[in-house]
Amino acid sequence: MHKQDPSRIPPPRSPASKPVAPGSPSTITLMPGQWHFGQGALLRTLLGSCVAITLWHPVKKIGGMCHFLLPSRTTRGTAPLDGRYGDEAVELLLQAIKRSGTAPSEYLAHLYGGADTMPDGVNIKFNVGERNIEMGWSLIDKYGFQMQDVDVGDSVPRTVSLDLPSGRVEVKRSTGHALIGAKK
Image 1: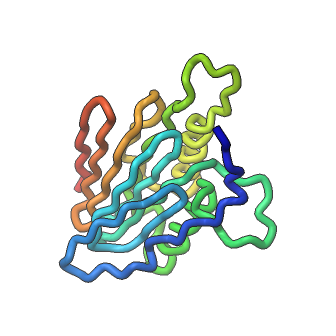
Image 2: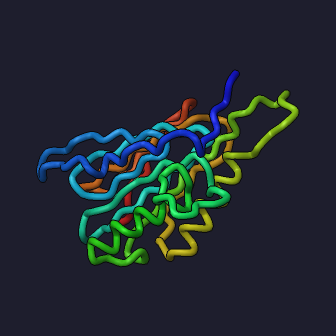
C-alpha cells in the first residue's frame, strides 16, 4: 500500500466559502483537512484516526467544526494555514471567531475521534490518533473553550454531526449510537 506524504497533498478548500441561506438547513460534509464556521447549517464528518473539534455559541447560535489529520507540521514557513493540522485548523476557526466579534471562552466544545486504526499485529505504530487527541485537548484548554463532551480513542470510526441552529451534536460509532444535546 502506497502512503502519500500529507505535506505533498494540496490542502482541501474549506467549505466555509459556500454561503448557507438563513432558514435553509444545508448539510455540509467536511472531508479531512476541512473546516467550517457559520450558522444555519448541519455539519457532518466521518472520523478514524483524525479528530474533530466542534464549537458552538449558545447565544449567537453560530459555530463550527474542523477535521484534522495530524497534530501539527514540523515547519510551516510562510505557507498559509492548513486545516489538515490541528493547531492550524483551530487557528482558522479562531480567526472566524474573532471576525464574529465573539470570544473563544463563549463557545461550547466537543472533541471526537482519534481511533487506533492500525491492526494489533503491526510492528510499527505511529499513534496518530493518540497524538491527535492530545493536540485537541491541548488546544481546547489553551484557548479556553468550554469542554462539553469527549468521545475519543478506541478502535471504531465515528460519524459526527453538529446542527448549528440548535447546537445539538450527534455521534454515531460503528457499533452504536449516542446523542449529546448542547447544554442551554
